[in-house]
Each structure stands twice: as C-alpha cells, then as structure tokens.
Image 1 (spheres, helix red, strand yellow):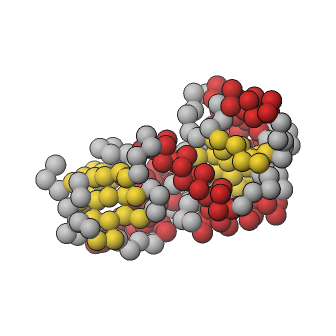
Image 2 (cartoon, helix red, strand yellow; image 1 turned 135 degrees about the vertical axis):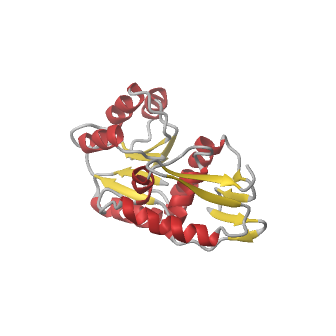
Length: 223
C-alpha cells in the first residue's frame, strides 16, 4: 500500500517516512500543498497524512480540493494547533483523524493501521481470497494456516491484488503501488515479483492468472 506524507519540516518528515517504510509501506514524501494537491489528483494512494501548516496551500485547502474531486481515501491530519475549532473545521472538510504534535511514531503507525483497516475492510481485521488470508493489523499473509515469507515488494504486489478481489490489475497499476515517486517505476519488474509470488503460492489454494495485454488476477483455485 502506498501512502502520501506531506510535511514541511524535513527532519520530522524523514523520521515519519522511515518509520512507515520500516513497517512495510511505500511512502511518497512532499513538503508543500501545491505538490500534494497535484500528487493526490494524479496518483493512487491508500492514505494521505497531511500537515496543516503547509506552504503555498495549507492542509485544509489540500483536503478540501481532494474531497471536491470526490476522492474518499482516508486522511490523517498532523497539527500543532490544538484548538477545538481547528479540529472541527478539519473534520467538517472530511478529515478522518487528527494527531497533534509532538507525537510518538508508534501511535502514528497504529492510527494509520486503523484508518486503512476501516477504509479497506470496513473495520474487519482480515481480507480473504480463498484460503489466502491477509491480516491488516499484523500485515501478514497466510495460506492454509502457514505464514508466507514475502519481500517488501512481493508484499506490496499481493496487498494491491487482494484489496481488489475479482479485478484484473495491469502491470502499471501494480507498479504504482510498489514504487514511490522518488523511485524508477518499472512495470516489467512486476513480472519478476509475480513470478516469485506464484512459486510461493503453490499449494496455497490461490493462484495469479495472467490476462495477456491486460494484467493479473488473484483468484482461488477452482473458482
């Protein structure tokens, strides 16, 4: 899953990004509201973390533009403003959660997990495709009771596929979830990750089917 972090304090942005990447998420880091607005309009994210006090466009303006485009991805606001009126204003604009500075990185990670669980699974803890189970709280995949050992790239590909059951995903769509803005997104490398995943999913009761010219579909064997 891919997260957008927008924070104009470089040291804080680097610390938060490192923690989120360490937890296995793909993270894009931007430092001003205009860049954030452009990214949210053109890229596919699972969640956005917005600081309120951004240059050029503040976090409230970025959030308002996002919701005006009909986007429903969860938004966590970071703020040094503790006033109730600011929290109410953000919530009325469509923010999903607030976290006041200074904060513990462990709390931020827990809130991110909760927001993703709520948005992706309707509050449920697990997502399934046949006998493949994805636990959003632990971010672990298991099949027939056995845990799957995955690299971070393989994890990102499989997360993207299980989050869209019954949907064919192109290599470009998968690459957008695996690589951040500061990385060279290679659609061809997705073939390598899919090949590795197929080997690891052998005997699991699920498979990845190729639709030539279209992409890949995760399905339960026998469906």
